[in-house]
Image 1 (cartoon, one colour):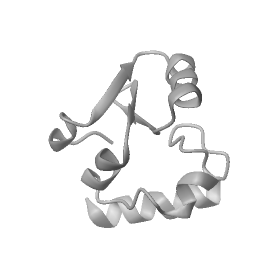
Image 2: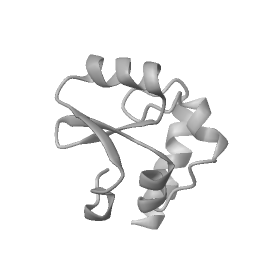
Image 3: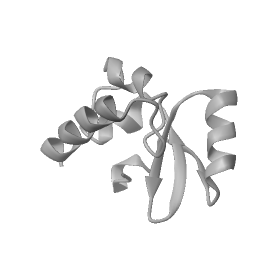
Image 4: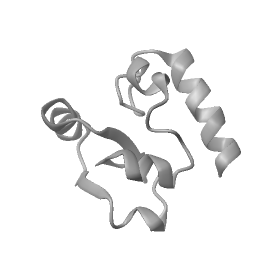
Length: 85
């Protein structure tokens, strides 16, 4: 889920999901995966992926792409990402 243009907007990288999840809960943002690692980004990073950070499906999935609360909402976001890529 990482693209090179996100370099300036990614806030935190983690090798452990639990750490990334803890950061998400404490600070907010969007938890995304990349090559076995995890990162937190803000709205700008989501836009770099071609997605709308204000899409209500983000809230439905708990802002967590890795372990979404709502798999149907995640699938809608996944389709939008595939189209944008």
